[in-house]
Length: 62
Image (cartoon, rainbow, N blue to C red; front, side, top):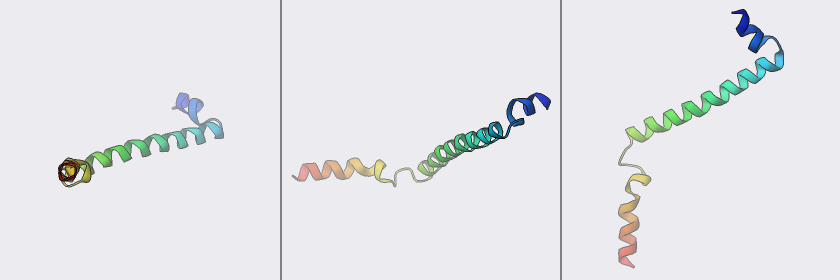
């Protein structure tokens, strides 16, 4: 435990940097994970999945 303390928590700026850095990385990972879950649950119902049907149909009508 002492090496971890000496490496990351001995000085206040190191601890704050670790906390903010960890929060930033966690937020990115959580956001990407939840986007993948959302996309899997709603596959076939989102604009990015059905766009080709409407864009091609609009181009053919013109």
